[in-house]
Length: 291
Image (cartoon, rainbow, N blue to C red; front, top):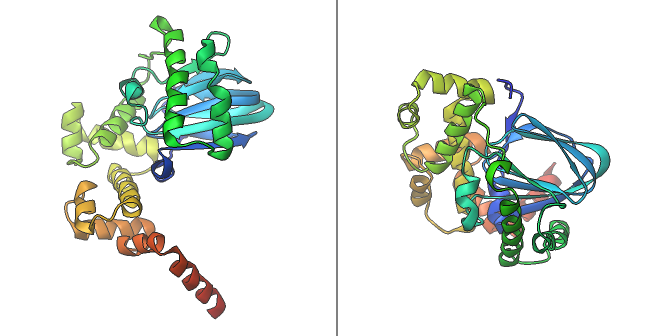
C-alpha cells in the first residue's frame, strides 16, 4: 500500500440507518480508492471484477464475492462486463461477528463458491433478490447474512485470513485513528486526547490525517457527528439539546453552528423537512411558481 492521498472517505450512515443495511445492484461500475466505517459485502452476479483491497489485487468471478472490513481502502473495476450486488451495514448489524469486523488485522475475506459450504451458498440467491427489491424484512436479512458468513469464516480459518502486518506506518495510523473516532464519537475527541489514547505524537496524528484525507481531523469528526445527528433527527423525537450532547457536541450552540455550516440549514429545519414532507413539497412548488 503506497502512502498516498488518492482515496476518499465515504459515509453510509444515513442509508444504513433507514433499514439497518443498504443494498443495491450495479453494472460495470468502476470506483476509485475509497473506504468507510461500515462493512461491505460484494457478490459478483455475472462477469468478472478486479478488486484492489488493502493494496492487494484480487479477481472475483461470477458466484464469488468479497467481505471488506471497515476502514479498508478498496477499488473495483470490471474486467468482464456484468453486475454485482453490494451490501453495506454497520459492525453492530451482526453482533456475533462484530469483534471480527472491528479487528484491524483482517481487512477482507474472500467468498469462494468452490470452498464455501453448500448451506452457506444457499443463502446467496435470496440475498441477491433482496438487493434488487428489498423483498424481506431486516430480521430475515440478518439471518441470511449470518448463515452465509458462518460458512465463510470456518472455510477461511487459520492462515487463510489476510492478516497484514506490513502496512506502512502512515496507513496503519489512519486505520487506528478512524476506528478510535468511530468508537468514541460521543466522547472528547480533541487532538490531545486522541494522540494520548493511541500513544502517538499529536502533530504526527494531525499531519498524517490531513495528508491522507485532504481534510482536517476536526472537520472529519464534525462530519461524523453531524451524520449521527441527522439520523437521530429523522428517527427520534429527542430534543435538540439531547441530540447535541449525545453526538459529542459541548453545547447546543456549537451543534447548531456546525450543522448549518455543513448542511446549509439549522437542525430544526432539517427535522421539519422530514416530519412534514407534504408541507415541504408544497413550499417547493410555490417557490418554483414564483420563479
